Image (tube, rainbow, N blue to C red; front, side):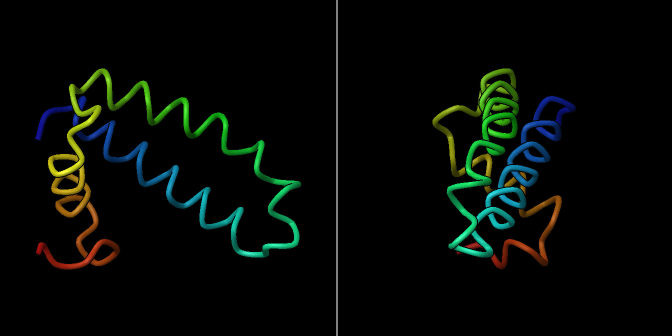
Amino acid sequence: MRHDEVNAAQAYVRLLEATRAVLEDPSDTPLYLPLLTSPIEEADEALRSAGLAGNEDRLFALVRDLLPSQVGPER
């Protein structure tokens, strides 16, 4: 796994975690939704830099390699 691919996978995981936190309490979601702007921008840039934009299969394979217990088995 290349360094830029690791960065992209980690940025995606951070975005996923931030999204889960925002959606944890639906009544507070509108209040915290703007906080996702930075993680979205970070993930977008990291995906573009690694050549993974639009290549979800490769991205998810990298995330599975990094965090197999959080993503689940490959289908």
